[in-house]
Length: 476
Image (cartoon, rainbow, N blue to C red; front, side, top):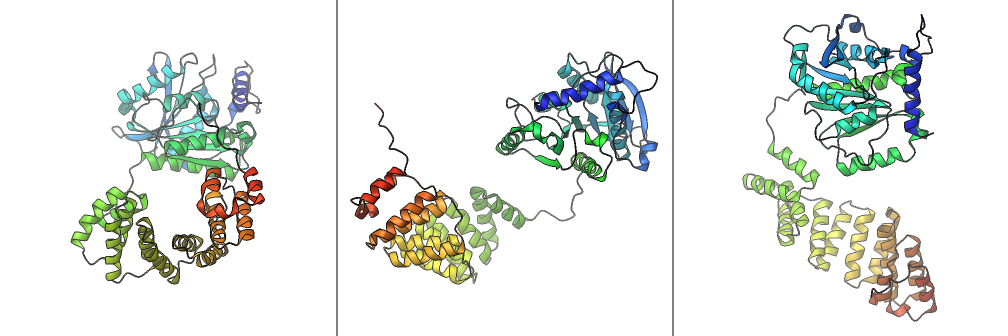
């Protein structure tokens, strides 16, 4: 069964079962059950029911126990994006009565709503227009709104929330066990979202959840995935256990974190901290700008020159980068990072002898990792110091070169070139086969690299070529 069908089935059952004209509803009626989390303050929450917001459509407003006339609180709206059946309003389901009450007990206004099932988007727009226009009359700060959307409500809710017309006051959206936004729905970068995936829904989601997180990453959006292990669909109403309650706690904390003011520190902003932040962003242009000013005011800070060199190198201003690194050394800064930076700078300038010396110094000072040994080996290759390069590559492998075409694969390839230069043909072929095993299969490189010229007359080379992708066809 497809996931969307599952959610519709659950809500259809709830609608049908609660609409029966029986004296007493069955305990198995899903709409009988409220949120499984409670605190003492819920008993003192203030409630205004059936406040009109658009024609005959109304909302119920749950206010904090300490609310006084003139107060304005952030609010969480429990979205109805499926509409109401005759005689069966969603806001009268226990989950949509108890959860807003719980939110109010935590110092925010909780709101549940009617909706016209034939005009869902219009209903949502009308509600938020009402809150912006008249929310203050009901103790609501319309500039600090959160939303709850669950199950089948998530689909149409995300259409609204991700649209350009969504209310500007919405600052946080918690999506409970619903479907992922469709591929046509954009992911907003400016709206924090808590996406709660219940384990019970996982079989119906298929690739949908993985695709969603790829889209979230591409959008650089502030989403949080909360995987509700050991919990079913609609756990907040049906799973009377601490695992469910902890997820509910996290949702409340999410709303409060995004809707309530963040306590501000009493210290003044630090230019140095701003520089470190910029460095960790790898924002080289801004880093150079800030460091230029900082160094003018702090000319004896060797760490500043080290960072300055790194930022300049990223901008390919290698002469200046080298001078900055050397200034750091002159000021007494001695660690592997500076020598690595100088080595990389000299490599870019094709000053391979100096680069090899700097990489060796970095290793001596403790940077004994596969990358550093690999960089030393590459410099030695450029210097035609092939035996030294092979020893460095062996140490790189001992240190743990990560698998992959451009890591282990490229290292094996360079070792093959070194062996070919040394006329150790068998070893060269051994390394080339390992190169292909690791996924490095650039046919053009194999066919044109002058280092491999001594191998091409060997029948084994033709066997190697059979393991590579076929040559690209020339276009007419």
